Image (cartoon, rainbow, N blue to C red; front, side):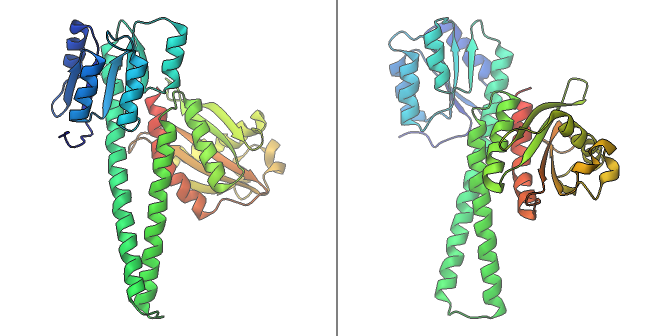
Length: 333
């Protein structure tokens, strides 16, 4: 019988005994199970018995193609996250490996510190995802229980009935938020650059909230916020206008680092006079990037010009996406 799924278990596959032992020693740590295989067939057997949550494998194996083994393991174990290591320089093989979206594609000779960091980051992400999935399932069970209670009780306008309906609605909202958060985190798995992260964020936000413009800023090595991306529907806005709009927002976030909605015209004194005539009807939503308490690494400034202003639901959406976006950006540093 296979072991129960564990968030921290790794299968290492390499046909070179010395490198295989080196990888096992490098990745071993208390509470982490590391299994090693020297061939594709042995890897399949170990995976069936132990169900690893992360695969670290060489592309060139003695008894089979590494790409074929990756496909077979991912088919059997639901898109098993994979770190690929290889000394292969064949462009076609490397291209096929990248198309399978590994967590990382690392060339030999290996940078063991980078490998440890990559593996630790992926295991942490898996642990967070597992917690979110369990929370999502628990909320669904609670929502079903409340719906059953409503069906069992006769329709009534009593305060208890109203309170039950409100609780059910709140649970349904929380379930929907958890589902959306899982969807977003899945999209961030393939984000290898800050541009990829912000494209995923903007795509989801625009799909859920409507047309919007935005500017993304990330701290550089000197802790100065620099523009790393502009976006908008159908096209990003003028760069000079975007920078003048964001400049006073930076001071606002530094003074009060939280998601907030700003009416640009009401605060027009904070902006340069050259853009005052454009400010009527401009609604701004600020989302600081805070991967953990007390650590500000950037901000996203969303704005609309005369369209539907940002609402409480948009603020809730930004607060939901803020932390995973910040973690994905920090991971790319």
